[in-house]
Amino acid sequence: MGAKFFSSIKWRFIVIYFLLVMAVMAIIGGFIVNRLEDAQLEKVKLDVEETLNSIVNSSTYLTDGNWDESKERIQNTLNEWRFGSEEAVYVIGNGEVPRITASSVNTRDLITGENALTYKELSPKLVLAALEGESTSALREDPGTGARYYHYVMPVRSQDGTVHGVFYMIVNLMMIYSVIEDAQIILTYATVIALIITSILGYFLAQSITGPIHDVTKQAREMAGGNFNQRVVVKSDDEIGQLGSMFNFLTTELEETIGRMDTERSKLETIFSYMAEGVIAVDRRGHLIHANPVAREILDLGEEEMSEDKYWDLKKLNILGINYFEKSSLSGTSQIEIKEGFYNVRYAPYKNEFGGDIGIIVVLQDITQEHNLDILRKDFVANVGHELKTPITTIKSYTETLMSANMERSTALRFLEIINRESDRMNRLVTDLLQLSNMDAKRTRWEIKSLDPYDAVTTAMESVQPLIKEKHHRVILDIPEDVRPFLGDSHGTNQVILNILSNAAKYTSYGGKITVKAKNFGSRVHIEVEDTGIGIPKRDLERIFERFYRVEKGRSRAKGGTGLGLAIAKDVMESMDGRIRIRSEFGVGTTVLLSFPMDKEAL
Ligand SMILES: Nc1ncnc2c1ncn2[C@@H]1O[C@H](COP(=O)(O)OP(=O)(O)OP(=O)(O)O)[C@@H](O)[C@H]1O
Ligand SMILES: [Mg+2]
Image (cartoon, rainbow, N blue to C red; front, side):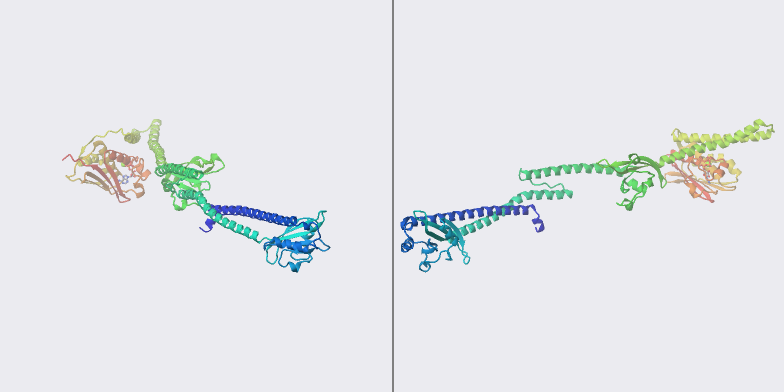
């Protein structure tokens, strides 16, 4: 209620109705009262005229003789006529001074002979007009009591037309006005009753209109809050009923549309959340308005970056020269390195429904793996080239010397030995590469069978024996009887153990100790090769299995290594369901652990 009620349609309805009815009643009331007053006055006039005419016509002496002489008769006639208390008749003679000749009032004796023009009860204007021969009337009001009177004058003429005198009649209009007053009171009552009825009817009429509107408003409010379950109750088929039906229809449509949009959005959201690429959206003011989990992870986006008014520079993604007035600048690609990851950046504008560009969507595709593989491939080619170039250069220079100069046989033989050694080196390198390439292509066929640990170690040891001898290493074999056979390919296993033993011998300075242990370990058999060599620095340890990786390139190559041994060992072990691990402490020694699946069937 309160201010709200007074500004409501209901209130306006009531007020307009009220004023309308009041105006109509006032006009009708005024009209009726006026008409009533006129009719009453007309009647009074006719009565008065008739009365006076009757008197004059019934008394012929009035038109004949001198009125002064027939004073008595006139007075008698008036007396006989018996006027009511509201009426008074004065007879005024037309002398030099018009004097009251006779009168119907009680005080007639006192006023007879008075000058009619100065007698306060009479209107001198009317008297003069009548003396001129004119019948007129006038309404006069007693200023003291407020009572109203009807004054009427009638000249009485003789046969020759001269005015003999005047009949002056006064009628108290009290009765008439009390009737009019009663009519006014009745009309006022009627107006009040009509206004009350109007107000009540207006209220209900307004209610019947505003009720449904109120319902619709309420439902609209509910809808704005996301509740679409409400329906307007339609009670009629009129305009308001149609409004309600239309609104219900609108609600259903809107609910369906919003439902569809929700589904679309949730689909998109799921795609965004689970896609492998990072996606962000930046609006034209540079605010980050969307970022999926992958993008948040890649770009390290916290709540702060995602906040409404934080400027987020696209330059961070190598996206430069964005100009929202130039369409071609809004899409393109770039690449970027973030935290050791490499990303392809693709961007394009997104548009609002009016077709204006309102921002940019950026997709970050993780190409770290491809990138690293690419580097690996390039490095690999460079490494192969480099590894082949050194022996070829050596072979070529020694061959040229041999061809160009005469030299002693012993020198020539030494040269040829060098050429032979370098050829072997090249041969080994090519063989290694071919083996790796075969394993990459899964072309290598393994023949998995039961192998004895002691045999496997001693077979490999035979090939390394010359180097061990040369370097005066001490070898300790710790292979107990109860160590179980394991499963593996004999050639592959030999190649792996050989490389590990030769590494141990190569990278341990003169007079070192090499310990080879074998033991059962659950369902597996472990072979460990421990040396007291130069060790491997921690930072190199994780890359030691990469192709061509050597700790100190110069020194390792000098020892005849190509850096493919461990890479091959790892590939071979893995393809035989085995594992290889390296522990090392720089300057102290290295332990390589080989783990094979145990042969459970063999005794
Ligand atoms: N037992 C070890 N002690 C110290 N360093 C080692 C040991 N084993 C391997 N390394 C280091 O790891 C590198 C890689 O070894 P890997 O066997 O793959 O290559 P290589 O021995 O140099 O060459 P290849 O085995 O092809 O003849 C070596 O160059 C060496 O620097
Ligand atoms: Mg080696």
